[in-house]
Length: 182
Image (cartoon, rainbow, N blue to C red; front, side, top):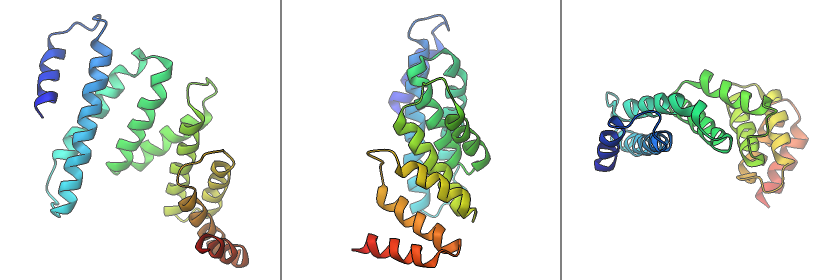
């Protein structure tokens, strides 16, 4: 809280043309996003339905990220967009999160790393899975698994098996689940 407060004070005295203005705002948004995550965990633990601390921090982080996005280096834009999608997702705005993930997958500029593209595929597949759009989810999970070093391969294979099951491919699903259990 103290670091966020001091950084806000410092930024308020800066000009937008200052060389450290953009990076300072990105750092502030990162800190707000982390504080939102911590507050959200506490709100869930306390079953606090009226708590808004995490929501306010998340909204402020999204506003700052949006404000500096066009001024950031290409190598950082992908990270910021992915963080924005995640914040929208956590905040329950799945439509905005899905739009960002889809835009990451459509982008041809090369600013997104292979890992970020794979993680976007998995995140989008998870949305489809949760919405019972198993055919769409399956295609994205399969595409993600083609990349070397995919993170959380076990959960992807598990969900892929359940996609098969829900699509009526029972033998394939059972075989995949048995392989995972082995």
